[in-house]
Image (cartoon, rainbow, N blue to C red):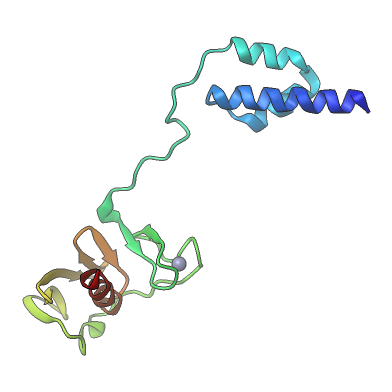
Length: 151
Ligand SMILES: [Zn+2]
């Protein structure tokens, strides 16, 4: 029993040391099972990896869109939301009609630059772009601008 507890403590210490050196805590904890304190000592003597290798690069603001169902931001090219599995429908120009925005620059097929409450929106096949955000549908974009202007 003491043997098992001692081994778990070694695994825990190894994981903590690995984490402080920006190395995988799980991999090193598993390595500590056969090696015991040897893994901990080897790890403690190893150089620290530069931070940031585990962090993901920030996504450029213009390549994301807002999911209309869960309001999380996902990649603009995504077909399905990775948070709530919402399927993004391909935007159709028909969706541009019956909205309180006015066409300012006609690109054909209902696409173009639209004005809404003093805001400029670009609407093309990849969605509605407003400021740095891309929306799945014009309806969501207009609703977001309403919410933005109310704040
Ligand atoms: Zn979602």
